[in-house]
Length: 335
View 1: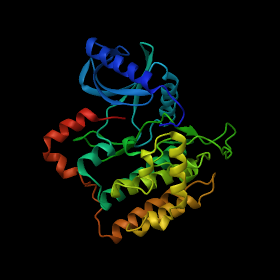
View 2 (view 1 turned 135 degrees about the vertical axis):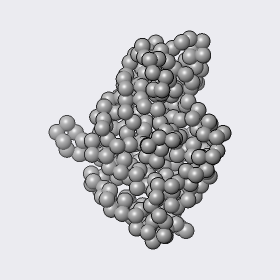
View 3 (view 1 turned 45 degrees about the vertical axis):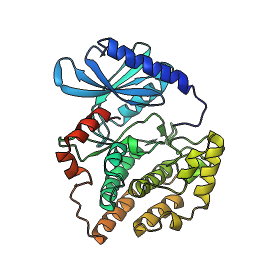
View 4 (view 1 turned 60 degrees about the vertical axis):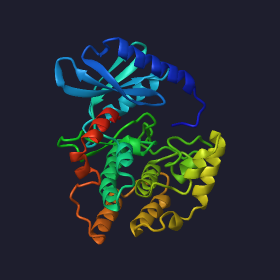
């Protein structure tokens, strides 16, 4: 999500046109993967399920750019190449040019945390802390390769496919807004001001919302807001999302974030949430976060609240017997 003016209506026409082509043609990407169904729509690309024409058991996801957004998908594909081999980052198969669009083929994953929140409602503290441990690890891995994500939200954290060995693994996806925080000489980028916020305003860090350049600290602060939302289903500034006009909405959200004390933000939550957000906001622009410290907060909270770290999430048992939701989640998998 970006606050730059865009041609959303034009992209929707492209999106509908491509969907119609898929229904009408036998579209095979890269001569190997036949598109089956649309799974999700985005600002710059749409996601489809596909099957290997030589192996029907080989299911993949294909992200196809809108015609005027191929450069964004090309950049994202390059980021995935840099992240190759990291746990919790989906494997890419190929990038090809298809009918004036770019197509990125990747392993098919399971439901997003957004899907699962729709299914379960607010997540329990146990589930949030177990998720947080993995999500912090994903950010640590991403940052170790010199990148920041810039758009953390529930739809960009995906579980492995259900009923596989990866069904409890959290994946980080969608690097369309990712950027490097290192210069070619290895030095950290310099701070800037007066920028348009990047990402989803609900979760952007205070500094990002105020128009400042983002760095590693902003990713982990955004994650903190996301974790609070996954448990509570609310944040103090969510009402500002109803404001019409990007600039006014940004100003209002920035004002609420700036004037909401961390203690008030974390009221009623375990003390570890306060410690997490306070730590994030204390970091210097170029400082490397102490990821182990943040993961330890989750572990301490789990033990203090007498939760067993068993990998059993709110949805784990329910999904085993809920065949209808399994079917819906299979249709809605996105990356």
